[in-house]
Image 1: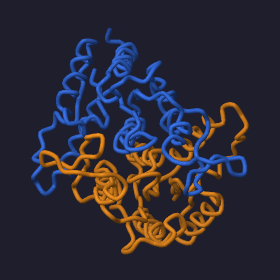
Image 2: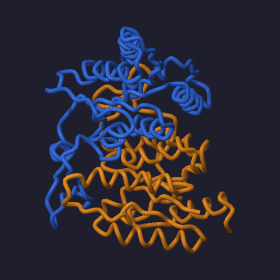
Image 3: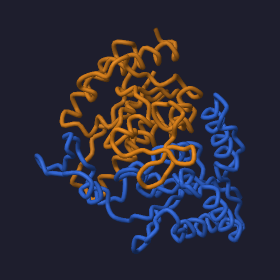
Image 4: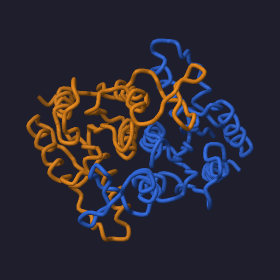
Amino acid sequence: MKIYLAGPDVFLPDAVAVGRRKAAICAAHGLTGLYPLDNEIDLTAPDASHQIFCGNEAMMDEADAIIANLTPFRGAGADPGTVYELGYMAGRRKVCLAYSNDGSNYADRLGRLVNVTSEDGRLVDPQGLTVEDFGLVDNLMMIHALELHGCPLVTPATMPVDVWHDLAAFEACVRMAAARLMVT
Amino acid sequence: MKIYLAGPDVFLPDAVAVGRRKAAICAAHGLTGLYPLDNEIDLTAPDASHQIFCGNEAMMDEADAIIANLTPFRGAGADPGTVYELGYMAGRRKVCLAYSNDGSNYADRLGRLVNVTSEDGRLVDPQGLTVEDFGLVDNLMMIHALELHGCPLVTPATMPVDVWHDLAAFEACVRMAAARLMVT
């Protein structure tokens, strides 16, 4: 069974090494991890970004499930590129799993980054836009998609020191995927 | 033909009015706009967020196409909740359209928010994570998904003064959707 490994991990300085660690964890549980950087792309080609997209989409179509890293990225929420992939896999009716290495709730996290105030019974950001306040870790679309199309979001009991390299929550997802796909 | 109207518009103080304006523009082009806030949800119910998710997913399943508002939201990139929906609709093989009222490229925009530097031939953010630098308006997954599963991202020639209420780029999407779905 094949698992698409989605996440902003591909933007890390040691992106290839992280992908290898994730694939090794999958293998230890009888699964095959498919990592975007496994696709060989000529980054100097004028259509490099198009090649990356097509490679990623082909990998997703080949995979039975996705494990998405929804750890907050450049702000309070998950990486939109990763979230696109989670949505795509839900739409394809594949098994959806994800983790975030920051288990705090979205409104609290946003409140540590910008001034969140209360107005007419709703929380608002500095632009006056409503802040989702359901006590969820991120936007309700991702959180409930996981519950309905796979397994609930996995978060660690305490935030790891290195949120980009600690793979305990990822491994918990792999175990759940293996059980769900009945390969162990 | 039905169009799912996705975007952080639902977080605006006048979210309902914006949805009505969008639906009226759809109607003027012979299309039916489906707006998340059309679903009646009891926001005081303990499972309100779950009800919202199920309502939105049912609307997406009913729709023939999506028009997503990818205008940058709380940072350099699009709203992840909206992006989830774009991915879901691409996965369902519906017609995907989107607009952003900020047509600048992602790397430039991020560079106005945080310190982006050059390191070993790649752009990096303050955390050391690679900044996508393909000259695209947002993450390549969304940009190329639109090209391959619908119509290319629509952006205005100049950024409107009120990015949350100017609907010219939205209307351009509606015209493209009408032409694509052959109802006019």
